[in-house]
Length: 320
Ligand code: ADP
Image (cartoon, helix red, strand yellow):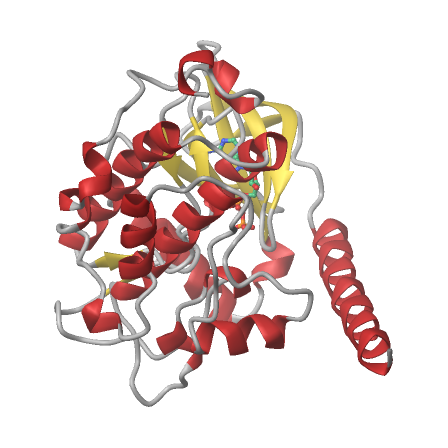
């Protein structure tokens, strides 16, 4: 009983902290003016509010020809310290250098007195996180189809020595044609060489790899993205991430022991379980590389031709 109370208290504290962070962000972020004029004279008309993350708010923006984009706006007041400024510049530099059919396209970047704007291809059908919330769990053929697109994008990233480091369902969006697009390069990093390592601890609790929690001695590399692919595949098929717990410390303890099970009440194929087990291997060097994932037997199973808009709310009839 005492333990329950402690857990509740901790949860309350975490919620308060998150609320304060959001309030601070909202206070700093003024809604952009209805027309934003760039330095080279292009006008963009602000539209609907799309959403906000820990760092930025996103609005629709229309150019003079009527084409709609998403503008990630970051208040200049929130990037006063050098570290935050460097991080934003790094996100822009990395994202700008990428072009792939399954990565949110970077269009432009500009500023006014109040905000920095990152203009992106619009993804109006939300992310895999909302899809899973509505659907509760997703059929194997659909997950297979999603995974091929995700793996394709990460293959491209890793071949350019970019580690995303924040892959999660909420950062994988649907474009107007229901293709998946990986976004949010806020934690991405380019390795100077294939065998160099990163030492900063970062990521989202449920998706963080054990070697990141292991501390700064050993460092981490491309394998953290492979781990996150395993977490996403498990979550889509089973309905929730494998190490889910109320308390973040409990999540971390479970990750460090790879303490997870497959639900017994849900029919998950042995081929899917085999792949997930490989992706969620404790030793990063024993995980498959991004070039090996599509070779697994699970990918020999049936595929839909495309994702239909219906998938956002229902299992398509032929896949149930
Ligand atoms: P942060 O870096 O602060 O986490 P995100 O990149 O996650 O910001 O964006 C915050 C929110 O804005 C997302 O959760 C989503 O709702 C919305 N968003 C981001 N990019 C797009 C996009 N390309 N199209 C539509 N909405 C987007």
